[in-house]
Image (tube, helix red, strand yellow):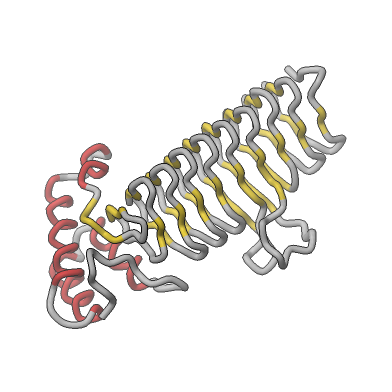
Length: 264
């Protein structure tokens, strides 16, 4: 299952059924789960673990050092989940000591050609990164997120579960769960109703999210008051509760707002 042109480091662990194609390079600290397939010309370095049945296509580079000027060859890690499809030229870096030491990617992710996961990012399950989608360091991406082609997220940005980012978007603020954003400096343009329907959310939950969106971003008063009012009226719905919790958990970046709105 290992092509004679491949190079496998002496300490690497390849579990049962792993296939390593021509001209692949696997470092000494790498663990590759059962049934994985490295098609050809794949480079896996660092302290990297790949989950079972993940397929990695030519010229992908996983586990390279973080693109951080403060990195000093610390033993940080990259963990990729199972059943992922990692296409041509994808890059994923290990973490940094100051960022927690771990870059983490969940299960069943589809990473199209030349997409990038920066150091210390935490990416959920069932995500889709279209061609050239890019995360700066320390980003957090929830489950079922779709990021359109050639879109980029500023470092420390959060993208909530079930959100959709349109192509050619630049994210400078956090995107609420179920949010739909687009634009060169991305703004919210509504709720990802199509995604909710595809994932079999109940009609009542979709209506609640729509109403909560209007209440939160177009209601009266400052954001804190709107947040309280939205929770009181719609917070019984689990999807809305997820949005409320996300907004309350403010971190390094501002929120994405609709249109020309700004935080109040």
